[in-house]
Image (tube, rainbow, N blue to C red):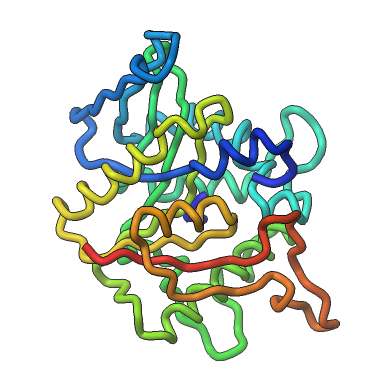
Length: 267
């Protein structure tokens, strides 16, 4: 889910979010280091990018709970996360870390050891949730079995997007990587963290023989990011057109999030 991967904010935060990027890496021992000393009065503001391993799951989830779970447009729109400092969505947690073992996901870590950005990704061929076939008008098992009715709405939208993209014939899923969740610490947005991640994403995908990258964007910021980096928009669904049986929109995110879009980039 992608994804990735923001809602009500002041203008300054929106401007920062407009710079969000994404990515992932190859081998855990391989570390890239970046410095912001040239653009900041604080010479200690540098970070490195590393592969997320299963042992990192608790740190990643802690980061997502703070910067992604509540603020992602769809989650915020349906109030997926209940009120309360320690409240969460177990189904969203499981979804978020489900592809970590593939060694395709990355995190940016500051010199102090804090996670400042993550990009959770998966091999398209290893994502049965997105590849599950079902009879026409029938829900795949992973959706039907979801116990959380709110998160089920998110899964159904992602499945709908996948079906529409597949129907276009523009995406070959057997050799593709999916950017599922993209998030950067709000204090680091606009400082190149996301760009470094996505550049490593492209480099690693090429090295590992992937031919295409895909990202389903539920936020206008992630969509702008993909466009800036040269991804091609292949499908767009306006939230006002995605309705229930009574004709009412299922998701009504705050402006400027008006649609979900799918982007791909050939490698």
